[in-house]
Figure 1 (cartoon, rainbow, N blue to C red):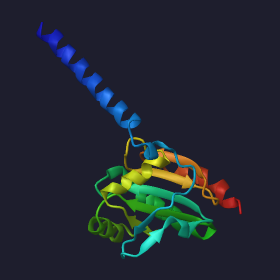
Figure 2 (figure 1 turned 30 degrees about the vertical axis):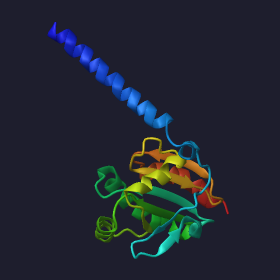
Figure 3 (figure 1 turned 90 degrees about the horizontal axis):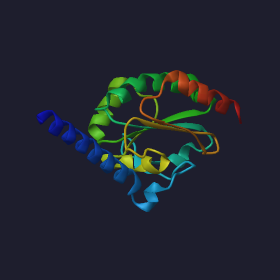
Length: 176
């Protein structure tokens, strides 16, 4: 009898969790539920406190990555992003990181890791900018790749590999 009650409780908890997740995805404010297909108009401070707009990099292939220092998959991706920025930056590739946390940890990690692309400080609420781009579960890392015209060509929930990025960006960098 105890096992039967235990199974019923587990099933009820799973149903409750599924209901909460479904509600979170479907009951978002209407403006967040709309998918963005172009480069969003986001302005945030960089590591030096200067306000930077994503529109500054229009005309480039943009890899926009939402990340945090406490996220181990994020930290795993960053060295590959650094390599790709170094390899393809002069061909029109621009990585941009949006740190979903406070300035100090992001700045410390950026300096330690030798990040060679702009890091914008979005604070924890910056994850809200990723929802209209397709991050319906508000997770990090979340990466969006835009072509030179600012159109979304790829969205990645979770970690993205260097090989996957290269397959996506190579054709885009050849187009002028």
